[in-house]
Image 1 (cartoon, helix red, strand yellow):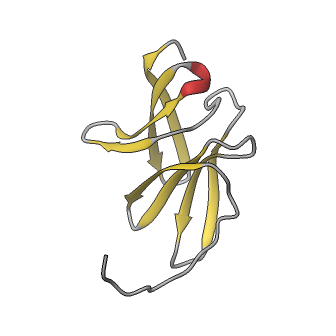
Image 2 (image 1 turned 180 degrees about the horizontal axis):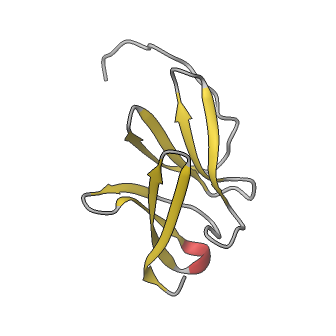
Length: 101
């Protein structure tokens, strides 16, 4: 792949399995025990944890993808489910859309 590196940013996270671009930010998933779902703003060089693993809404985040009507969807194999993740400003809404969650 040819290109030009514009920015370098270290998350310090392990077990990163998913990455999507949304609204000029990356959203990543980390299956590590201290992982979860994170939003990365490269311009501000800021990382924000949206959902921590081990929480009621996110047992263990794994893969993530965009969806036409649901915003983002991610797998949560810890709860055997697929969940939607809607980001609206500072609020985060999670809904189980498939599985036992």
